[in-house]
Length: 106
Length: 106
DNA sequence: AGCGTAAGGTTTGCGCTACAAACCAGTTGG
DNA sequence: CCAACTGGTTTGTAGCGCAAACCTTACGCT
Figure 1: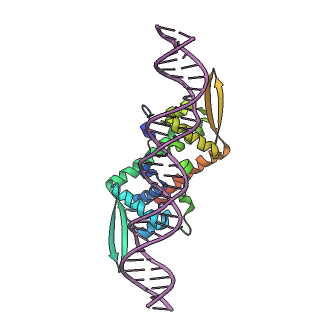
Figure 2: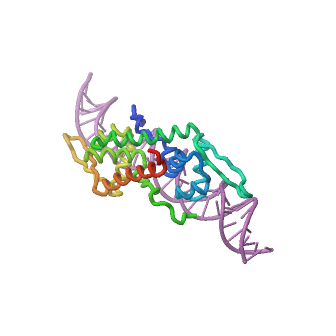
Figure 3: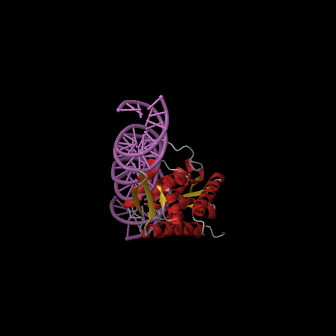
């Protein structure tokens, strides 16, 4: 059974909402570009999971990934696309709304 | 591979973070007690999903569910436990922290 | 009485996916 | 030459959230 008219404000963007990706996107929204290792450190994700989250976000067009070689070592950096920035900002706004909508006294 | 020392602040509480349950808990945190139908309306969840989310939250001890009969109809109400209140409040605090931690200019 | 439908939920089946672990390629150190 | 490290990617699987099916009781209708 599908709900007739669910409140659209509650439809959180699952792609963005996932804790790992929420962290990735939030980090990127402030520093515009970050390398793999840095992202791994700040998010606390394992390499494998970071890798797959990044791939998923890239597939969805929320960020771009650039792979280069710096001093013989591969070096991967990620940065938000315009869409990505919109999505993460919109997500935080929805969360705010969800919270304030139901907690009048704050 | 497990990360050696992941930042604990980023370990979001998945039980609470799930959109449906986040909505349920947030609603309950302000009105202290709500019946099934009301919760269904404000969260936009289907009966089935609301039912299973409530069961899961009850199992985890975040809320209590009371089933009674009101005018021959079953009537289910839910309200947060102390633990539940702590968990939802802590969760919003963590989200705040996640956001502000990485977006200095806000 | 008998039948359809609505209210108020619970149970079930399955497709997705996030995680850990395994893997891979290049590099550096001994 | 081999071991260990860096910098990732790929894979297997357990768990979970969703929609749909189901259940039970209560109300109309006729």
